[in-house]
Length: 156
Image (cartoon, rainbow, N blue to C red; front, top):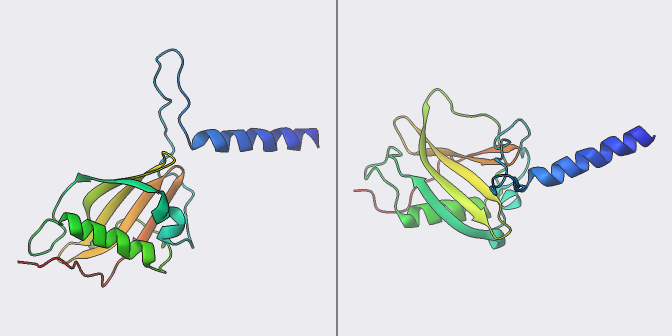
């Protein structure tokens, strides 16, 4: 019984520390987190369950690339509309990465008020619009299907 309790305490401690960086006293830098996008996932959860709107501190576009639309690039309001759509959607996480007919699109970072960072990638069809969004967080990966989602900004 004592061994089981010790193992439980060790696992609880490791889980707590995997969410935040622990400073390396010799360099003064935080520990490098290596668990983003590992095997566990958020299946069955909604976007707002993973990243509640009240917790969002910043949204940063890291890489702006074409998503197969007429005007090629998304605007600031397009990104805002997409995140707003995900926050109110009742769609749940689906599994899987890129499909044969898809390509990687723009990448974003969402940081929360408590310091958590999420990496988002917009996925688009080779010859079409946005088809999905993936989120990577500490030890988790999620894919949200966006088939039928329409970008609202005028397309030239």
